[in-house]
Amino acid sequence: MEIDPFIFRLSIFILSIFIGYYVVWSVTPSLHTPLMSVTNAISSVIIVGAIIAALADSSSSIFETSNIFGFMAIILAAVNIFGGFLVTQRMLQMYKKKKK
Amino acid sequence: MSANLSASFYLISGILFILALRGLSSPETSRKGNYFGIAGMIISIIVTFLTIGNFGSGFIYVLIFLVIGGSIGAFIAYKIPMTAMPELVAGFHSLVGLAAVFVAISAFLKPEAFGLGFVGNIKLSSLVEMSLGAAIGAITFSGSIIAFLKLRGIMSGAPITFNGQHFINLILGLAILFLIFYLCISQSSNIFWTLVVISFLVGVLLIIPIGGADMPVVISMLNSYSGWAAAGIGFTLENTALIITGALVGSSGAILSYIMCKGMNRSFFNVILGGWGANDQTSSSKSKEQKPVKNGNADDAAFLMKNASSVIIVPGYGMAVAQAQHALREMVDALKKNGVKVSYAIHPVAGRMPGHMNVLLAEANVPYDEVFELEEINNDFANCDVAYVIGANDVTNPVAKSDPQSPIYGMPILDVEKSKSVLFVKRSLSPGYAGIDNDLFYRDNTLMLFADAKKMTEEIVKSL
Image 1 (cartoon, each protein chain N blue to C red):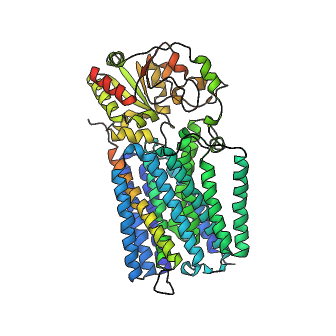
Image 2: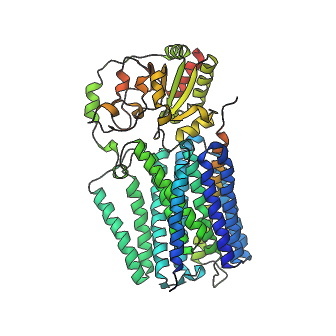
Image 3: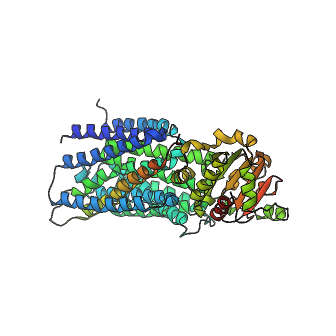
């Protein structure tokens, strides 16, 4: 009997939760704010879905509703990607060691 | 690009995202980690374009929208003051949530584009995944908007509660489950829209009863939700990068919520079901208001600290509100010139989001190796001459250790009272967020400095 591909995805998902669990516990508490902004930035990889939605073939030359939702999602995700990574970068630049 | 090849690249993106989080284990590796994250994102986007393989007019539009969104994001990232970080993060969470809703909507409207079947006949598993993604995304969106408004001060931070609130939330929660079930049977678009609308409503109702100082938990929780929403969409799109990321973000937010709850010694449900502010704590504070306090000024404080050999600074949300972090650094610099050893003590729930105080101190060029977490520094208070409490209150209240009746009993606190003398910068004797009077105000070794945190610190700098 063949295994449903869903099971594979579920395996990836559950193993990733465990990876996330151990990786996040190792994050130093002083970097918890950058952690939030960077997780926010990477979760915007949802833009992949937005691009697929935006570029889905429409029957006419005019964009269909589903395309429009896709484009709106692209804007939202793009704000997050650039905003999230850049603000994280800006914060991390500020963490400096004592000058010896 | 073949499906197998693109799936492999998505896996690489996922691994890069894991490395991005791994980098945050220390400030030195964190900057490299952020580049891993950016690389992962670029790979994902390029692979998506190559997989679709359609570089017509639609592609140009996508680029235009990317640039528009990207410019807005970059502009915000450079302009935002560090004190506004909590509301920025809340705002960003709302965008992820809404993007998840939009993607789910368009997958529902045009399932063939995603290979999920056809309108009216969408694969059952996909339908469950996309409706979960849409529901959690919608809750994340409206919940984050409320959190944003509260943090920004547009909406009062006070908890909004009404009779039967929990009952209504329970009913709506069950309604969401029922609608998802019914949607699977009927494939009806009306059900889908109802589901989205109810989820928006749940997000609002979930966050309004939670008060200002519980915001660290709320933000972490919404962070977690945005991850689960992304994972739901990831399952729908059968995209590994999205599934991995969703799981990472989801567990990250959950762990942060746990750490924040532990920092307040409260259960997650206790926080979610409504804040302390709703309880009447006023009776206990009234009886104590008559007690005498020692009142000092900037010169007294400067004298005390100049002659100390070690000083521990305890910053709290008040420092963020007064934007006093730069003045504080100047004060510490002046003290160091006098040979005083200075360190900073940060309580896990100080401020309005996890790590809030650390970012503000970093902004003011405080080296991170002078900043310590509660467990690292708590024993040092006994040997320190002066504790300078600036904008913190409840997290220093000794009542958490002594009075089992107190609502904050059992909460881990900074043992400020053990230091030889305590300088407490505060505008008035009013109780903190928890509504409890702080015993520390009336101790013999406490000197109250009644002023704005920034002004007082600047005056101390002058008299040093």
